[in-house]
Amino acid sequence: MNRWLKRFLIILAALAVIAFSLIGPIDRTPLPERSFYKEMKEVLDTISISNYPANGKLKAGWRKIAITPNSPMPMAGYIMRPFFETIHDSLFARVIGINNGSVSCYLISVDLLLFPPIIKKKVQQRISNELSANTFLYFSATHTHNGIGGWNNSLVGNFVLGDYNEGWVNETTTKLVEEIKAINSSMKPATLSYWETNANEYAENRLVAAAPHDGWLRGLKIVADDSSSMQLVTFSAHATSISKKSLSLSGDYPAALIDQIEEKKKSSGIFMAGMVGSHRLAGIDATEFDLVNKAGVALNEKILTADYDKAFDSIEIRAAHVPIHFGSSQLRITKNWKLRNWIFNSALNPLQGELTYLQLGNIILIGTPSDFSGELLITHKLKELAKSNNQHLIITSFNGDYVGYITEDEHYDQVEKEEVMAMNWVGPYYGNYFSEMISTLINKLQGR
Image 1: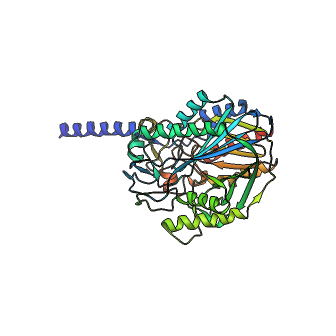
Image 2 (image 1 turned 45 degrees about the vertical axis):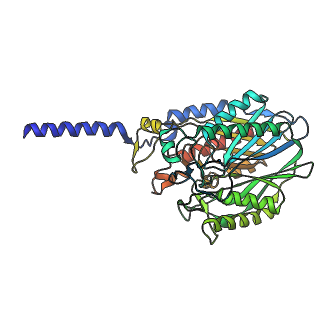
Image 3 (image 1 turned 60 degrees about the horizontal axis):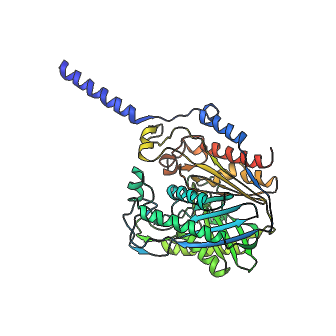
């Protein structure tokens, strides 16, 4: 008996060691005591936001590029679907170029779940080599859950998003670079204005029904001197209208909305996912592609009655890429336990990302590497902070890196839904952390 007991205890100890090496407790150390937080505070205290004064009249141009593959590829958005079978509507990448005589900025969005980090890296490298140094790139995505995968070569990426397709990645990179270069050489004099309209009835908070949500449509309107125009649109509802069982490619409601803009307003359009973390569509009695189409119509009707700010033909531009400091990953397996950081890094990639800061005149755009929640805009009064100095604020998600969901901190231990249990990869307090970084950047602009 002693021999068998000894063996049992040895096995039990070995299992305990293995378990300890794989899982650990959630780190709930307050933010001010965390080293990464202190490092980030120093970065924000010393960071310089590049200032590009207007040096002539504003110029702009835009293009769209088909990115639908010629052969079946995996689909990304829910569980991995090995390949699509039909194409309900084609997928596109869209690019706006804006030049104020000192710098050229390019706003890029793709009909994908998020902007693929590998394509962001490749585009940045090629643009830095092939265009002027005074070029700034701002990335986002529509967040359709019926686009294609195959663009993440990590262990989990290949499993969840399908086998990595280097050929499609390189082809899409080249298309984007060539279109950016084409825009760069063909911009026309133009005016730029901000617009917004309340569409709260078409969005809701899916974490907690009574919690605040952001339901405003926001965007930019650019009108060239030949009367052609471009409408940039952001909205905070998830593009999850279509069944996860569907094998049909689609840009979901953002694509339907852009189709409406191009048909009704005779304008080009580009959609960037807004603060979609914890938000979904609401108020439309339909499902599947019927919901897609009705949402496109309903949201476009709101845009038709939007309030437009003054149009400018000459603007100052400020821009910065602000690398974010992160603590160890905290991918939860239970309420109080997580996978160890080395497991996360091996299966995915180490947490990394930036805030993309772009100010166009009195309009501030901030891109985040996450599903950023519109609830934070309200609870942290970010919109009011910008408006206190006559600035408009647009926050977008999926800027070319991804660190999971960033939601209101109080939900972390109170809600057991996927958004805070499985898709929060960073741990508690990051709602406050991201909001504080954004607030600091806005205040820095005002010299506060």
